[in-house]
Length: 116
Length: 114
Image (tube, rainbow over all chains, first blue to last red; front, side):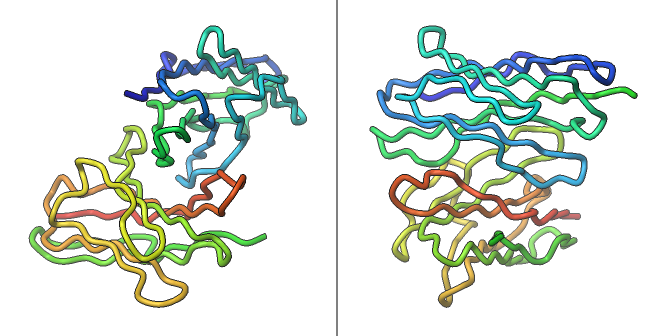
């Protein structure tokens, strides 16, 4: 069965520090998608990135970068030079294509606190 | 930029009452979803809807829940007889077809059952 694990429940950093949020997933599908969503204190879920299982290229978007490694079933998220506005809960999620289970399976989230 | 909208933003109800949560998905999307998030916990899938029928549902989505697309724009979640444990944030999401696999979420409806 599919599963997403975010072992870090809460991380606290000081502004300008780099921080990496870990995500490990389990699936039997060959084709699947991985996602990161941000949930700020206001509560909405904001899409950050989607990666399909055949694309292991790392991606950088401004201060954000993602490292996808199929060999370790991990899809980690790094924020460089963190800012107070990055404080939020971050969720990693998986959807499976082969089995047709397109519903998202979420991890339990990592709460990031960036202190000024 | 198109977005998913949800109404109401907050709802308080008495146990045993029926509630209807409403969503307007992104206009050219064909797949619709409901998720819920109990306070402080992870987001859980409830149901997905495509071509006017349920395509997938979780074990949470029991007989007290139903979904409907009453017209060309709205997508609703009905809880027939609310329980205390139904108190949660309910999120609607929609996605496009083909390679557009990203689900975009609405702002959520916070439901409190007393």
